[in-house]
Length: 226
Image 1 (cartoon, rainbow, N blue to C red):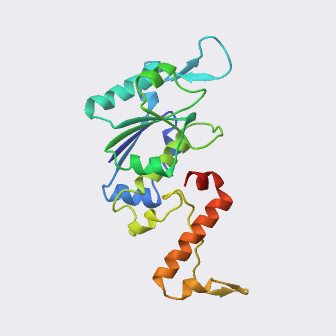
Image 2: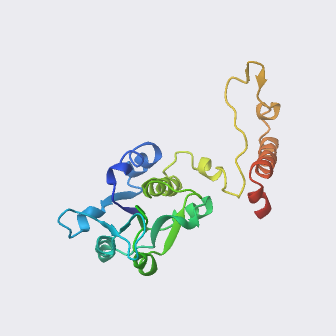
């Protein structure tokens, strides 16, 4: 898999993409991630990539030319399955979407910034618009990193125990059950006896029941979709 991230702040993505599971996946050549500076695609002598919006109003807008030039250069080199734009008014990013995207070969993620990008890019080039929640951040770089992380950890071989990813929250539209580790008793707080029983079938049944209960209590919206 290849993920190309277009951004005006490439340094902001260095740390999230160079640690933990993502770093290991890159080291194993399971994924190639390229952070591309949009400032390299402007013809402005000051390397500016933003301008005032037509019609006035507060805030700046990412100009069409550098974004178009960057995407067209990448598209000349290979075919892309998705060109994703991170924006607060996009479709909500979910585990189900992460699963689908993890099956793709080549993805571009355009990190939104300022007041957004020229609408013509959204209309003509972007194939998917994603939001990580109903709030506004300083830019789309962190959402781009989050989306990348969620996708990469699902790639075969990225996690040594692949069963771990399959049992994460939201995989079956359910929250994960509670987990415990040693010691079995701490300050009088005990681990549920069923988890110490060694009965795999009963433990799995208990975990499923706990997932159902937690989902109904904490995320009734998911329980309704079940």
